[in-house]
Length: 369
Image (cartoon, rainbow, N blue to C red):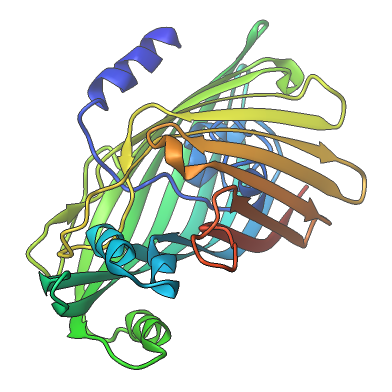
């Protein structure tokens, strides 16, 4: 496993990609730690090798949204310095992640078992950026608003093969997924008191855009001790680097993401999990806007207590590629078929009303038998 980890780090050193997303409520409530979470119905998203670690049929669903802002709150107290800071680096992102997943075990006999999984994962990202031409000091400035919309729909067909031994279970999994993507770009002057709301109405309602039909490949490995006392996993997503068509001049592709995870269920009724991005990814802040690409590389830690009628989840995450973003705090409360999870970061806006610069909520659930 150490050799595999080093290999993934070597090949991922110079690659940029979207950040590793959040799909499903259990991993989300635990800080996004899902690569070694064996009881997660969304294994097809986090690590297909986990499909057969826990036997039984699993079904999960999840719907959610989150937002993140850079310097947008500077507009609440405009002056030369705040305007300069705002125009130099700004973005407002709203992301909606929704999914449905099913896992079915397939007994093979002897030391082998397997499982298949199928899912429907839909992510929509809307971004707003402000760009300007002219002299800020002389007030001769022409400001425009750039609106990007990115839709990603994935339908993975996943398979895992599990080999049992007296010293643990070895699992390998692969997902072959159909990808439909749509990118829209709007560039216009802004005016009026509700220009931000109007912009999001346009970007989420975008009817024009370019479509892409592509295929992606994810591969995962895991090792688990009996009774999931220890589970170790590593996954590579979008290993074939699908290209996405765009409306603007800037190109875009889904470059590989690599993540390592470890979890333990050694404490009764409790699961602890830790995930680490093995390389820096790139946060989607829109295209053709001239803004710097923000690097993200998360380390996350979370825990869940699974009681008879409910489960409680808590988690923390940190972007180690950018120390100024604060800490993300997660929590969730589930009653099997219904679960509510949310997160917020410790950074707040610069305006008089101190609100988190990043916040998200998910509603979902699932069952297994």
